[in-house]
Structure formats: structure tokens, C-alpha cells
Image (cartoon, rainbow, N blue to C red; front, side):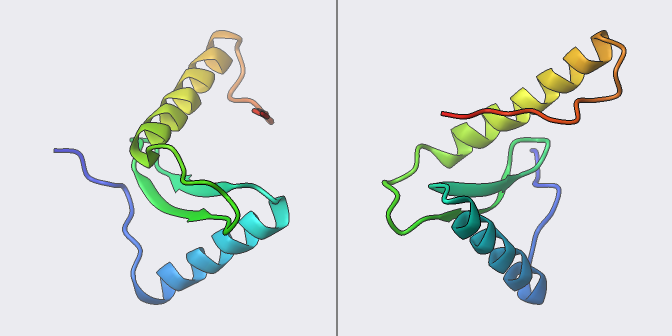
Length: 89
């Protein structure tokens, strides 16, 4: 069975939670999450005004898959990676 690559507890959890909340506030985004390369949600936050998010597990799997696909595209193009990837809705 697959396991998340990282687990946060205590002070580490509190620090990352504060940073994620700050990112959410500064970006004016509805949702913010930290996802590992396996597609596990490590942490997430939601703006108070945001509607209920879609399935976080499904979204995390798609985000991780998208990252892996873009990494493969970069390699096919002879690059070590992309400096920037933008998805905006």
C-alpha cells in the first residue's frame, strides 16, 4: 500500500499550516494544498468564502500526474524541467 512521503506533526504542522494560510490569503485563491509526487494531500486550506472544494484526493492525483507529465515533456524537449508552468481559470 502506498504511503504519503511526509507526515507533519506538532511545530512542523503549525508552521506549514501558517504558511499555507498566508499563501491562501495573499493569493486570494479559493484553495491551497501541498501534494506529494504520489498524489497524497499533505495539507490543505480553504478560504472562508470559497464553496466546498472538489474531491481533494482526485484533485491531488491529477496534480501529481500533471507534474509528472510535464517533467516527461521537458525531458523529451531536452530540458531538465520548466522554469514556469501556469494554469489559470
